[in-house]
Image 1 (spheres, helix red, strand yellow):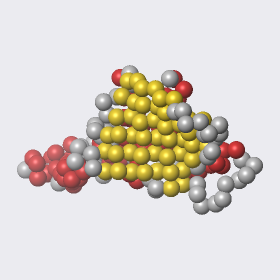
Image 2 (image 1 turned 180 degrees about the vertical axis):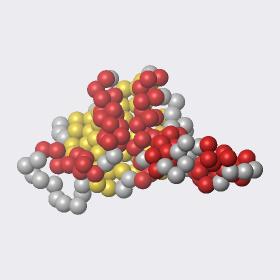
Image 3 (image 1 turned 180 degrees about the horizontal axis):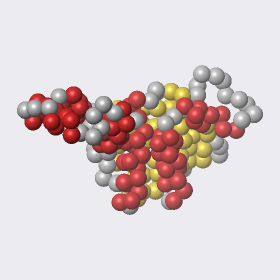
Amino acid sequence: MNMRIMKTFLKLLLFKPFLLSGYCTMWKTLSFRGSWRGLLLLLVLLLPGCRTEPKDFTLSFSMESIDIYKFSIEINADKNYRIQQQNLYLNTQEIETSRGMMTDEEFAKLTKLIAGSRLFKLKDSYGFDKEPDEFDPFSNVIYQLHYTERRKVKNITMRPNATDLFPKKFLELIQFLIRLNAKT
């Protein structure tokens, strides 16, 4: 639902219902009139409908341990995916590639996680404000996410040590993509 339409609807429903009926009895019959609980209930019921699941998108995700290993996955809105893996430590040029199609359940979960992640509200970079810890093996791991929906593009680069800065659905999205790789 368009935000402008929803705001107009809320104004009419909450603040001027007497305009709809011609007199004030409609406002008096609403049981949540003047109640903050009623307003909260109405918002809880209406706001989840504002987030729409992505329809036409491309999602690319890569996880790289610098000079050791690289994994990447690309998923399109037609449920097709491509996974590539490369062992960088041995300086091999060989890239293992696998392709597949997501099940309806997997794709539904993916689109729900994308919608809940609010990708376009996230910053472009996380965890690069300090130098990597040489004793932490995960400090040299970099996650990169490239998301395109219609004409919007979002790139996010992060280190795993910055995971406390993200919405829960975004972390679930990253876990889902890594598990999809393990499935193949």
